[in-house]
Length: 108
Image 1 (cartoon, rainbow, N blue to C red):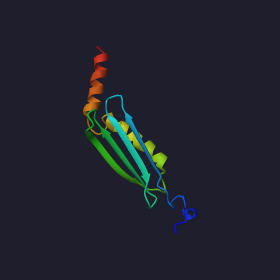
Image 2: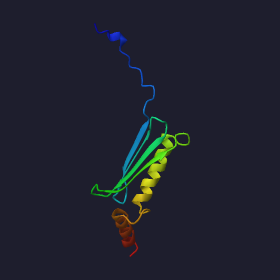
Image 3: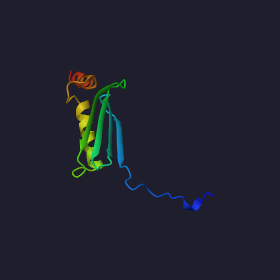
Image 4: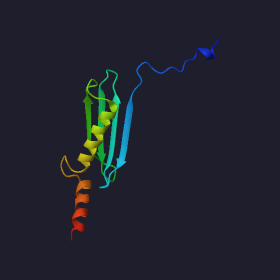
């Protein structure tokens, strides 16, 4: 017979710690950052930037040592990377060029 009182709602021994961030940037690019703790304690950071049409223009996956990084710190790093990529750090992206042209038009 099934005993309902024996069912436990205990948390797993190693709960997965995960954070994500998604933002539409001023220049039309979209930043998506996700960081989660791996079973061995390291942090996996995924940084993705898409153009206005949703096409991926950059994607980076980085494994950070858990002894030196926390998930919130990895998220800060990932948001910074995404904004730099969208701004054209890794070559000129169409969404970054569009923002530059709009700024240049204001100078006339």
